[in-house]
Image (cartoon, rainbow, N blue to C red; front, side, top):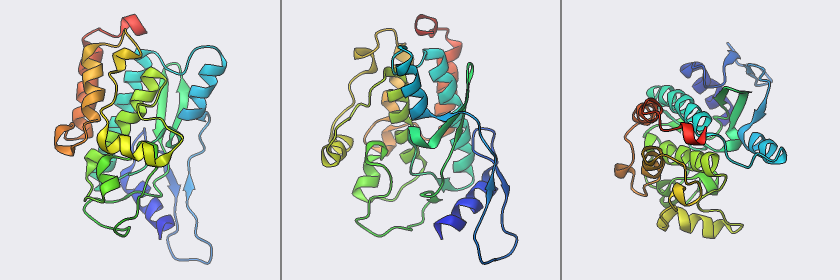
Length: 235
């Protein structure tokens, strides 16, 4: 069942930026359960709303954004090494445990699956339309690069305050996911370094082969951006 699959996945991963599983059923009982750590804070979407409510805009500083990108890429790298694809990376499934400096954890593995397996049937879209990769829409076999794409969408929103394919019509959104290149981030935020913009846009390539090959590659590229000292203008 999805419930059992989630606790087995969490048990297999174990990473500081993935929610921690504390207890799970050692034998079958009448009531399914598992116990996760208690987190204090708010989800990423609520944090962005909170920043906007304080008059700070809906984007985070470049320094905070790159820190969050490295943390999530590191956590997802551990998930992928365990042979799992998350399939539902979105702000609602990212928890902000601390804000300054930021510390985040990845939540909700209810839609996750083992790489190279087919749990859903043909023609069934799994995931949130605003954060699915093109290959999730077309029903192609998925690998870790689907999560790379979704994380790219999260980071685009985090750094600019806007979703590149925002629409109230899910069909229009899915069409953009399949066919429309995202606007350059620098159109919305002039101070974003070219290297960071190139990384995020590279994560959002329509073809998986054109994206970074792994979350480790994303994490290392984000670290290079940080080390280059180009983030101070937007700090």
